[in-house]
Amino acid sequence: MNTTGNDETETYLADIAKAMEGETWSGPQYHKLMRGLTVKLSTGAFTGSGVVYRVEGQRVFIRTAAHNIQIQTGRNDDKITFEMVKTFRANVRVVLTPPGKEPISVSINGVSYSTATATGWDACSLMVSNLAFAGAVTKILADYKGLLQKGKAPPWKKKNQSPWESLSLANLKKLIKSQDPMKGYTLLQAGYGKTTKASISSGGPLQFRKTKAKAADPDASYLASTSEEFQQVLLLDASDTNTTLPGDSGGPLFAVHPKLEQVFLLGVTLGANFYAGDESDDGPVVNNAVTFWEKDQDVR
Image (cartoon, rainbow, N blue to C red; front, side, top):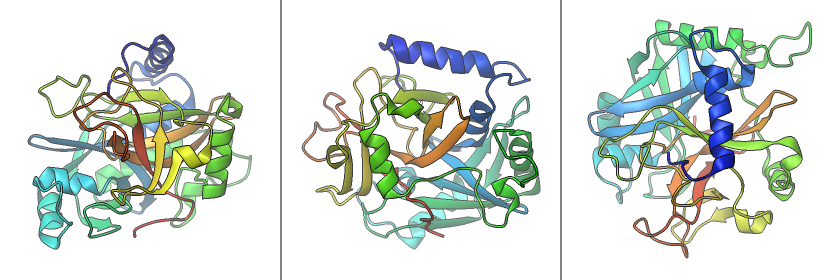
C-alpha cells in the first residue's frame, strides 16, 4: 500500500503506528481490533490480505477477495474452478499476528466463494479450524472493550455473530453523501501489500490507508455492476502516491468513528483502476475499488 506524498495521511498513520507500537499495544481499543484481526495470506511469491469476521469454537471465518484464488493460481482471467480452489487451499497459509506475540500461520480448511465467473461479486470466505489460532482470535476479542453497554454480552459471544458492525446499502449511500466531513467517520483500508509499486516483494508489513469515497454522490461512488461485471463496487479516492498495491487484495475497508469507538466493516479491497472508463493497470491511479459486503450478506 502506497501512502506517500499525503501529509494528512502520513500524520494520521503515524498516530496509529504510535498508538500501536510496543507489546502493550497502547492506544484506542478499536485500533487494536482492526490490526489484530487483519490477516495475511501467503505462499511463495503470492501475498494477499483478509479479515476475521466470525469465530465459532475452534473454527475461524475470514473474508477476502475471490480474485486472490485467481492470482495465486496464475489464472487471473479464468473462471474459478474446483481445481483452482483446491490448489489455493493446499498452498496458502493464513497468518494472524496477535499483540505482543509471534505470528500464527495455519492452513485453510474450507473455501466458499460467490461466483464461478472471472468477475462477479468478488467475495470469498475462508475457514480455518485450529485451536491456537481460534484462541488467539478469542483473546483479541476478549481484550476489546469498546463502548459495550454494561451487563450485555458482546456480539461475538452470540452464536454465528461477528465482532464487526455492517451496513445496509441504503445506509452506505447515506455515509457516502455525508462524507464531508463524514459525520465523524473515517474510512480506513488495511492490508499487507507492497509498500511501493516498484518493490520486487509480493507484499509488505500491515499498513493502513486513510481514504474517502471518490465522490459524495452515491451514484458516482457505488456501482451495482461495472462493465467488467464486477458487482457491488465502492469506488474510493486514490492517486499514484496514495493507493492499494498488489498484496492488499482482500484486505478490509473500515468506517471508524474515533469518538464513539465504533467500527463498521464495509467490504474488502478489489484493487486500483478496476472501474471501466478509468486508466489501465499500467496508467496513473485514479480510483481504488472495494467489494461491498452488505449487512447480513455472506457466501457461506
